Image 1 (cartoon, rainbow, N blue to C red):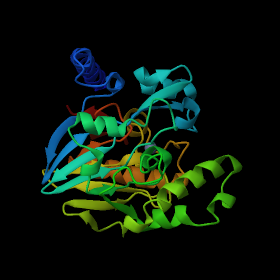
Image 2 (image 1 turned 30 degrees about the vertical axis):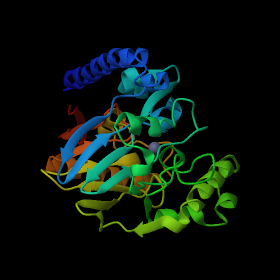
Image 3 (image 1 turned 90 degrees about the vertical axis):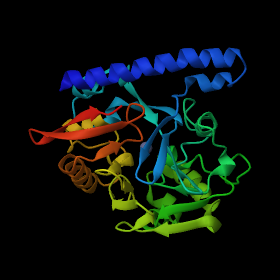
Image 4 (image 1 turned 180 degrees about the horizontal axis):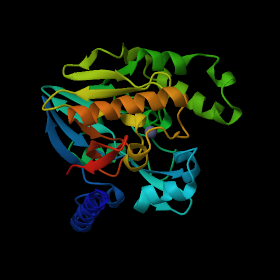
Length: 317
Ligand SMILES: [Zn+2]
């Protein structure tokens, strides 16, 4: 099974290389901007009533020490394999574009400008997928961390997705907009909280709240996966056996399928995060549901197979 995983990864790398050589020709011909070269090609498939395209906000570097707090660095390195660069690992950040009827839906907005130089490319990636920011009718958030939310407002302080309504879990919204939040957080997180609050303030007149256990849109169920943040949600899309969008309940398939009870450094409440991660993995493995991960090796589509009390990641391409 390890070999199958490795083959899956090599296959994806080859696809990306092929894309880059085609893209280089398009840049030379002036068809696409040079900056688009670093982005993964949009990846499309159908799920129930939705045409889904995985778009890319670019990549993020994460210190290995954050990935799994209670694991030995050499074990984390071995699991992450080709993602490792020195003492860091390169994670993808892949929002989703979903189309059904007249709805053009974006799931998470990426990190925007100024977070990490390798991220904030969503608008460019949407263009490569043939969609202008103004065409988005609804934006749905999994949670309000910078790499999922800070791409919401432009430099002018107005929503980049000017014609969209914004859909957020009520618990998540209430947690982040609390006026006394910055004072309750560690000092080095104050700036992050303030930027998040200004992003949320910029959409407050266009926001709709939802709760876990209901559908946010027809065929898109909201799953309570609190722990990473207080109101973090995952989604399950109808169609076939179902498709689970775990978001940051499972930030990496190699590490957290093999060790679902390791502590991810950016989880706010480890015990709740671990319990909900295990629930999602069990649901996926038992129901043979596909999973699509925001930070997983692009495009992030795979299955979970139960093995020896943990899970094996089987990429789907
Ligand atoms: Zn994230």
